Image (cartoon, rainbow, N blue to C red):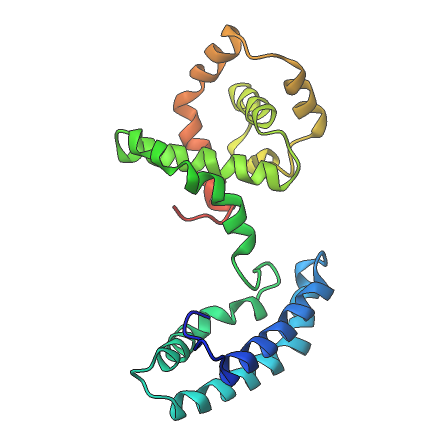
Amino acid sequence: MKATPKAGSPIVEETLTRIAALYGIEKDIRGLDPDRRCSARQEQSVPLLDELEVWLRVQAERLSHKSEMGKAVACILTRWDGLILFAEDGQVEMDGNLVENQIRTLALNRKNALFAIQDEGAQNWTRIASLVATCKMNGVEPFAYLKASLRAIAAGHPHADLDDLLPWAVPKTAVKAAARTAPDRAAATEAMGVNRRLRFVLDPIHQMLGLDI
């Protein structure tokens, strides 16, 4: 914690110890389905979170509101509802490390977004970037996935079945087939032919990925 004095702080040490216990629970339930994760969190994490909140509020009363430590504790308590959201939803992670790791390469490359020219271009860029990152998270080759999806869209894939075009749902055989075919003029022309429909399809897919850009 940035507010930690050079000589150390019992408050920080105690806070980190309590948080470490929560991470220990997360380690044990990693990989389980959302319902089981939520159940385990309700049983094990919620009591620890309740104790942590009470303890932090006690410390907040003792600390000067103008001190760095007092400001840090007040900041935590102000955002408490958001910090404990993971305990209510098995699909939510305890922290944003996974997302931060996925977008690090995009952050390093963010200057490219300056050449988006207009808002719509930037929004399209973020949609594609979101899909590429999701492909990597699911072990799917991004170019092959986009190519297979665009072909499906061009072939009249029904809008009602968009779930089938998500990176984790597209048949692996279709992705592998697309990966074996090198990019060529025909493929480029095919992609351009569905450009108008691309935004129509990617908008709901982007929403389904749970990313509000």
